[in-house]
Structures are given as C-alpha cells and as structure tokens.
Length: 272
Image (cartoon, rainbow, N blue to C red; front, side, top):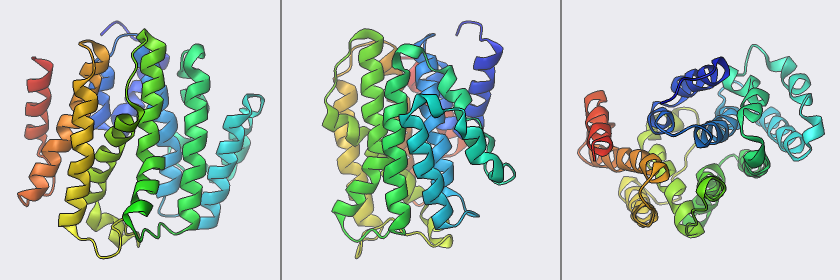
C-alpha cells in the first residue's frame, strides 16, 4: 500500500476501530478506489451507529436519520451537520460526528453516488425505527436487509463502474450485502434480543435464518465469481469468505470465528 496522508491515516484508523472485517480488504485496495470505498463505508457506518444506538430514543433516531438524509440531498447544507449533532456530542460516536470528514475524503467524481445511497439508507433506517423493527415475514426481512446492506452492494457496483468500467448484476450485488447482513443478524442474535430487537420473522428460529443467509450467500458467490481478476475481486472475496466461515462456526456451535480462524481465511485468500 502506498504512503498515506494524515487524513487518510485518520480515516483508516477509524475504519479499523469500527470494522476489522472491512479494514483488511479496504486497506489492500489501490489509491483512489481505496478512498472511495473508505468514504462509502464510513458514511454508512456513521448512520448505522444512529440506528443501533442504545441510549437514543426512537423519535430522536428518526429525527436524526431524516435530518441526515435531508442534508445529504442538499450539498450546500453540509455545514449543518455540526449544528445537527451539537446536542449529541457526548452521546454519538466519533464516526458519526465526523461524517462530513468522510464525505470530504471521497474522490469528488464519485461523491454524489455515495451521498445518494447513504441518504436512501438513512430514510430506510428511519422507517424501520418507526416500525420498531417489527419483522413479521421474510418480505419484511428482505426490506430491512435491503436498506441496511443491499444498498451497500448497489453503491459498490457504482464505485466499480466509476473505477474501471466493471459492470455487475444488481440483484446479485444486493444479495452480496444481504447475505453478509444475515450472518451478522445470526451472530448478534443474543445481543439484539437483549436490547429488545428481534430481526427473525415470526415463526423463524436459527435453521430458517441460516437457510436465508445461505440462499443469499450462494448468490453472493455468483456475484464474486463473475468479477475479473483485480482489486475489486480481491476486495469482495474477503468479507464473503469470512461470512461463510462465520456461518460454519455458528452451525458448529462456536458462535463466531476465532481470531486465528479469521487470519487463516484471510491468508489463504491473499496468497492466491
């Protein structure tokens, strides 16, 4: 990896602090696409922290998320982030408070795409907060996972096209994000229930949710298999392999991948 600027080091440090899973593949990307993906991840992580916050009331979350959406849709209002978050300086995490920094970190020619999909995600999250994440059917689960993860796949698609003209299947891109999210839902089941949130549709238990994750991961495999050799393929393979590994560990009763198992999976992929 080429020498980083202080601004990029700050962004990568924040990435490492918020996601070891994505830090590894993003850190291996080449300049320009690395900045784009880092910006996209941190912007979406910023609003995810609002949706998942344990101390904010549902009404506050909805207000914040819809305010973020409005600001993102009007670039001249970006300075309003500071005003919006001022009352929550001691409550919200740094990754959220610094969302303007992550926007600025993006290459200008892909910035509008990042702003668009992050604003769509913010509205979707607000809608599901209003519903108290009341997921009754598989269709409800599809809707929720579309907004919080499928959109990531669509944004990545646009970044790939911007970077080198790569075109992918949008449906498979959504399944890629949805599959990773389904594994996270399974892995975090105990913690989610403890905070009063149940992402499993009515009548579903682990077998049904694991089957749902596997259906989407199978499509994610097709998505990755269609990519040409290069940095995009290298990026996509690592989170997908870790998701498959985590699901296998859960089925074996281990709960999650050990640090050693994570390193082993990453080493196998990066040596190929």
